[in-house]
Image: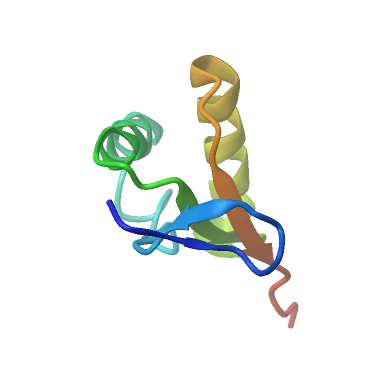
Length: 83
C-alpha cells in the first residue's frame, strides 16, 4: 500500500481511505469488523467516518473494533448537520 506523509506530522497515511458512510445501514457490525480487518491486512491505515454515519452508530462500531484489535489506524471524523 502506498502512503503519504500527513502534513508535517511525519505520519504515514495510506493513499486509500476506508469510507464508512453506509455502515450500520447496509451491513452488520460483524461485517464492518470484517471489512476493517481486510483493509488493515492490505495496508490501509486511514478510515473516514462522521457522527451521523449509520444514524450515529458507525463511530461506535469503529471504536469497538479498535478496542478488540488494538490496531494503529488514523480515523478522520467530521461533525454532520442536525436538522
